[in-house]
Image 1: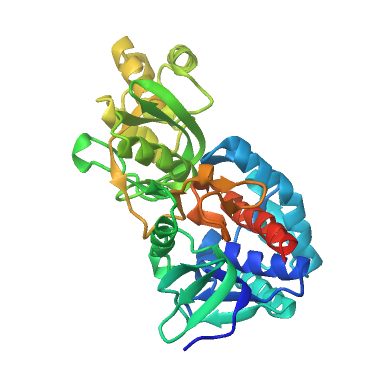
Image 2: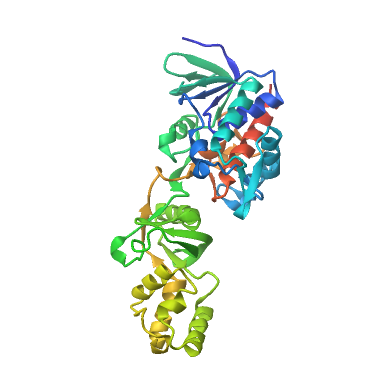
Length: 417
C-alpha cells in the first residue's frame, strides 16, 4: 500500500534523528517531514545514557575530542551548532542543565526521560509526522527521490536522512542496518568496533584485577602501538572482575580496538600514580626509606594509591608488603616503581557492543559534505549522528555530535525546499 509522499523522510528516531526532524521543521515549517523508527517508543539509547541521567553535552567541545574522520570536517560541523547553542536550545525549552566535573552537562532533574520527553514533544509541536513501530526494510532510489519500504506500505520522499546509529547497545534497537542501507546507496563503510567500552584482561597474565574488583583510582593509560606511545589517557579507572572500566578505560578502548583491527602490535600500560614518572617516584621512595625506615612498605605505598592496590602491586612486584622500608633493596624498589608507573595490562578484548556506549567506524566522513551533511555519492541523501565515522570521548561529546550534525543537515534541507 502506498502512502502520501513527503519532502523529507528521516530514518531513526534517536538523538540525531529527532533533532534533525525538529530543526528541519523549525527552519522550514512548510516541509512535510516524516520520522520513522522500528521502535514503538523511541529514544531508548538516550534513556540509558549517562547512568540514566543523559550527559546532554559538555561545556567545551572541540574537534580534538573526537576520533574517526577528518578533524577539519568535524570542526566545521561543531562550529555550526556549538555546545553553547545546544545548552541554550534545551534551556529555552525548559530543561535546565547543570555542570558536573570535567564540564559534563546534565539535566537538573538528573532524568534522561526528561530529555526524551522534551525531544518528542518538540517534534510533535513542530509538526513532524511520527511513524514509530514502522521499521524500514529497504530504500529504493527512484528518479529524483526514494521509496522507503516498511512491512505493509511504501513511503515516498524527495530527500532522506539516515540517522540509524551504529551497533552499540543493540538492546536499544541498534543493529547496524543503516550501514547496509548506506552501502546499497553507494557509500563506503569504515570497519566498525565498539568504543567507550570496558576492556577484558587475561586472567593468566598475573594481573591484579580480580583481587581489586570494585576499586576505583586515578590512572594514566598509555596505548603503545608498534612499540611507540600513540595515545595517552588520564582519568578514573575501575578494576573489575573481568578487567578494567571507568572513564580512562572507556576512553582508551577505541584506540586499542582500532589498532588491533588494523593488525598492529598494541599494548596498554597503566600509571597508577599519574602525578609521578619513574624518576620522581623512585626518589620519593628513596626519601621515604630514609625518613621513615620503620614504616611498612604497604603503609608508604598506601599514601600514593588505595591500600588494596598497594598490597596487590607489592605482590605483583614480588615484594613483601609487611616488611620495613629500611629492608627494601634497590632492585625491589625499582620493581615497585615500574609496577606503579607502567603496569602492563594484558588486554584480550572488550565486553562488546552490548556494553559499548558508541560505535567507532561507520560511513566514511570523506563521502559527506560537512557544510550540509549531504552525501557526495547519492544525491538527496543526508547522514547524521553515530552512523558516520566519528566517535567522541566520554563526557557528552557524542550527543553534541548528534545535535551539531542534525543542525547542519536540517539547515540544508530547509534551504532546498
